Each structure stands twice: as structure tokens, then as C-alpha cells.
Length: 363
Ligand code: FMN
Image (cartoon, rainbow, N blue to C red; front, side):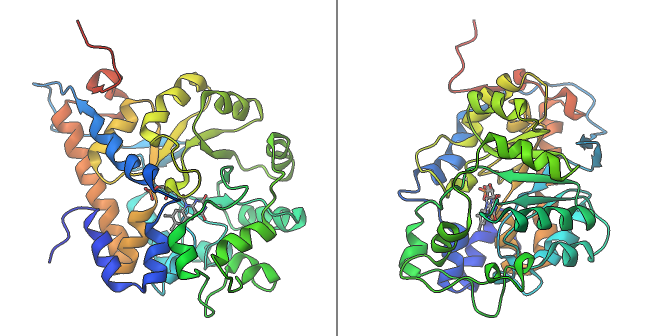
């Protein structure tokens, strides 16, 4: 059956993948309230389309950190993509390049920074988890820089792993035929079997819980790459991130996999945008599945969005072709949304093109 929207890939992935792997990709933390909310909250935003505007030409191009992109739709870091498909991160990298957009590679990728770079040209960001051993971190950042990665997305919402009950039940661990390729040769490349979640044990053993704002400054001393702080959902932390030298903010709740009962990212976005005061670009990830979602995020002040699960689900279903199709469907839907709202370029998308449930009534 023909896939006609991004969400349809989830059911296909569920059928194709072993339960342990599907559950790892799909699930959120604890009650998964935030997981549902990330999607549901988009339905609390409606359009105020403008009519009788010449929409025969639509320009979706944008510039992000100085890089020209075909559209404001980018790929978030998702770990261990070779569990979904043998080509894993290679396929994702090629699909992103072909679509003229950015792929963010996870620290916990099953392909190394060098391997992903060797797939060909492309604008790529590197997602960083900070390990207790700072030499490991410094080496990895330098390798990413040498391999041509353009920015660091520093994930700040994971001092410990959120309680993902499906992973605990399934005793989730990285299948033995795969490694976290960026750490190959070190003990850190493998994940032990555990009595609960192997990933939770790995994080508890390796990831630095003491990480603080001074480390954001430290990172800037070891790299010239701009640093995006990923996982900010409050005005307070937005101001601190900018003070610490962040080049951008990613409003993210880690796809609802960390602290449950945080708001949907689309509901936290405006607070962050206001606090940023235009000093740095603000991005969003979490629950984006439609072109209308992309438009809503931009209308609330985001400079672009990232998608997570749609990439792993489409990889599982169809490999590189699946990821290409996800990017194409979102692009086509976003273009149509712009046309039907009367916007021909991204800068024409304004707060007046939407109304949210939390807005005061218009007089
Ligand atoms: N975020 C990270 O910063 N690093 C990771 O390694 C990482 N791995 C993820 C693995 C999976 C299977 C999923 C679903 C998310 C992961 N995330 C990771 C979070 C994503 O970068 C992103 O914030 C989230 O998936 C966006 O929500 P969405 O899946 O609803 O699009």
C-alpha cells in the first residue's frame, strides 16, 4: 500500500522490527503523557489563512547558521540507526544531502563521524553527550570537526536516562553485532546486558551528571564549531544558554523520553523565543509529523524544526528511500500549507497566521 503521510511509517516499522528495537524507537518515559502531548498540542493551534495572494511561486529556502538549506526541516539525532536498517546512518546522511538539508548524527550512532562523512558532501551537525572522561569528549569533538561537521548539538536533558519502561521490560541492549561506532576500540563502544535497561546502565556508568553551564564554556575552548544547546524548554535556561555562548537553542524534550509531564515542545516554544529576543535562532523538535506542524512552529518563532522518529521508522520500512520520502512528504505538505495560508516565503509566516488555544480572544 502506498505511504501517503509520515505517520504511516510507524505501523510498517512495528511490523518489520523485533519488539525490543521497535519499542526502543517508539516509546517515551513513564506514563508517556508528554509523548502524546507532543502530538496533541499541535491540534490546539489553528490557522488564520490569508487569501487572494499570488502563491504561484513558493520559496521554502532558508539559511541556518550561515548554511543555505532547501527547507527549514532537518533531521534530529537518533541513536543506533543500524538497528532499523543495515545502512543506518549512511542512508540517513544520503537522504538528507539529497533533500538539501541537515542531518544531525548522534554520539551513539552505529556509524562513526568519519564513515558518515565518507558518504559524500552534506551539511551535518554532531550531537554530543558529555562523558565523564573529558579526553574522550575532546577527541570526539575534534574528530567531528576534522570530518567536516558544522556544529555541535549539545544535549543537556540527559544527566541520567529517563525511565523508559518498555526498555526495562525488554532488557534493551545494543545487539552484539553492532557497536557505538564513535567509541569503537574503547569499552564505551559496547553496551552490556543488564537486569533492566542496558542503555540506562550505560548512561549511569559513562555520562557526566555534573555537567553545568561552565562546561558549555569549556566546549567552546576545544572547538570552533558553533554550539546549539538541545533540550531547553524555559525562558530562564534560554537566557543562561545565550550567556554561556550558545549559537542557537533547540527546544526539545528529547521526544518525551526523559522527564515525563514536561509540556509539549510546541507549547514551550514561544516562551523560549521571547526570552531569546532574536539574539540566537530557536529550533524545535518533538512530534512534528505534518507540514502544518512545521508552519505552526515557524509562526511561533522557530527558525526550523527537526524530526526524530519519522527517520528511524521510515529507515526500517524502506531504508534510504523511506527517509527521502519522509523529507519529501513533509516538504510538499509544508509548501501546500504555505500556499493555502497565503505565504510565499518563510519571512511572510507570522504569528497572525495562527491562533492558539492559549491566546486571548480577538476583539
Ligand atoms: N537525542 C539526542 O540528543 N541524542 C540521541 O542519541 C538521541 N537518540 C534518540 C533515539 C530515538 C529512538 C529517539 C526517538 C529519540 C532520540 N533522541 C536523541 C531525541 C531526538 O533527537 C529528538 O529530540 C526527538 O526524537 C524529537 O521528537 P520526535 O521523535 O517526536 O520527532
